Image (cartoon, rainbow, N blue to C red; front, top):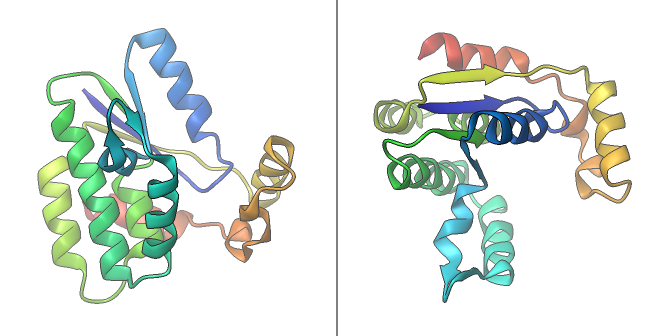
Length: 161
């Protein structure tokens, strides 16, 4: 079974994934694009970080494709296993979708749609407090999107698919 846990930063995704992983023996997948940088038995963190920075500063098409390939890779690598994904297609859509990319999301959903998606909600204020408590120097705290609600666009995606 494939479970995806979605929501804005600080909503509790990782906490839920860790709980399900421990109590239900699911493999937790966080940041599946890291697997692209797995060499000699370890993740090459510097290469991963440098590439992420380039991707984040790229077009919505590049971001959609990069994270979509990570989603596709994770689901296919663990085919037939019980996995829980800390972010998946809904988050990719929320952060990266723009006009003209619907066919890519149609293909991603067809190729790696989870069996269950859990969408978590916490108010922007609560999320900000959680992020601050986790790491008061977190760069995400400087991003104005930390105050976005996000639910309308995420719910739109879920209702569409």
